[in-house]
Amino acid sequence: MEKTLQVLNALEHDGVVRRYAIGGAMGATFYVEPVLTFDLDIFVILPQTAYGLLTLEPLYEALRARGYTEEGECVNIEGVPVQFLPAYNELLVEALAEARETLYEQTPTRVLRAEHLAAIAVQTGRDKDRQRVRLLREQALLDNNYLRGVLARHSLEAKWEEWTT
Amino acid sequence: MGRMDNLRPEIARLIAAKEQRRRKLAALSFSEKVRVVVQLQQMAAPVLRARGRPVRVWALDDLKPAGGK
Image (cartoon, rainbow over all chains, first blue to last red; front, side, top):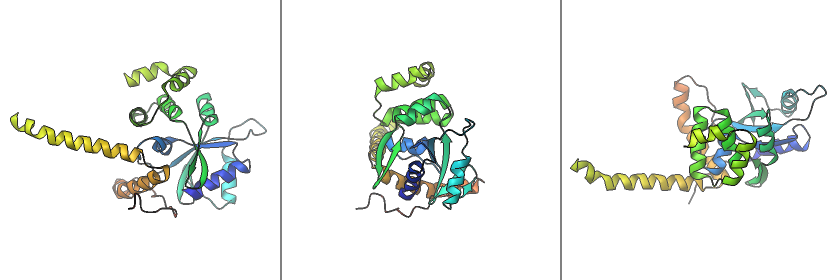
């Protein structure tokens, strides 16, 4: 996966994406026990297009130019199916802005904060998100004050209470 | 009921050991966890494929044995 992250870093360096961070199950795995997943979810902030549209096409184009092909909703980058998810709301934009810098082996990368992963799971609201919230509460060292702020800013407090009490 | 009572300490020990293993896994480094995820993929893939779900096990060339001694 190190080579995959190096490709993502190159995309950011070249301005193809403005910022990226690992989220989804692999993001959660950073904080908790390993969770089975077959995709690497990468949240991205895309450069603004001339028409103000959010489109992944320039990103896919840049990856094709580097020899990485699409497989369904993912792009296979160095043996890892990567699913790119543009930051489509304020919670995701904030999560990307405040993502945690870390190293994977020798390669720098970013992972969404555990508090944002929990808030995104609550906002998304599927059964597997409920499971993710449970795991994060059990095993991640959540900063409760920070989490309360995130939930309040994005109107998720009521749903959080519903899920956790 | 008496038989269940006899089982309880053993079950409690098993549950505690399982919990300890989960905490140990949670404390691994990120790259070690990724190796465990790939091992999980290798175990789950045949079952999922048999159910008609096409999945791809990550082909990582930076894979080394997880938790090697």
